[in-house]
Length: 173
Image 1 (cartoon, one colour):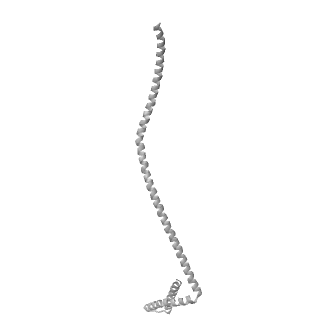
Image 2 (cartoon, rainbow, N blue to C red; image 1 turned 135 degrees about the vertical axis):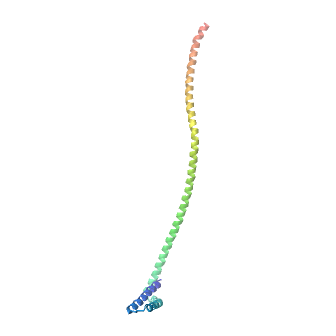
Image 3 (cartoon, rainbow, N blue to C red; image 1 turned 90 degrees about the horizontal axis):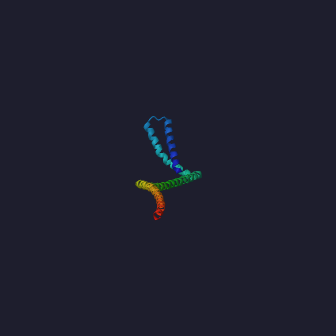
């Protein structure tokens, strides 16, 4: 990886130097200038590769940097993989929770239908409950009338007994 970045840096530097040198020389022919720049660019990667290989094999700092870049790359890839795994886990959790919420929504819809049916039954029974209340009120009034009639008949019976007991000795005497 380090070789590539060095190659690209060397490549851009070499091409840029050729262009600067051509401009400094004051060449007037743009086609010849273009040809020289193209030739320099073509030759630059091969020279850069050879230079970087030679530097890499001889320079311990370059080896250490290459190892560092490889380790950093591995670390970043591992971090990205861990993050990706966490996002997949989060996605799975979200899908699971969404299915639970769908289940609960279906259950709530079923409860709503059940409550509506209970309300309808309650409204149907409300008429019967009203009739029961009316009958209860009539029975209470009837009990009051019966109680009054019972008191009246008890009083009447007592009067008849008193009248009979006072009239009865007169007949036998």
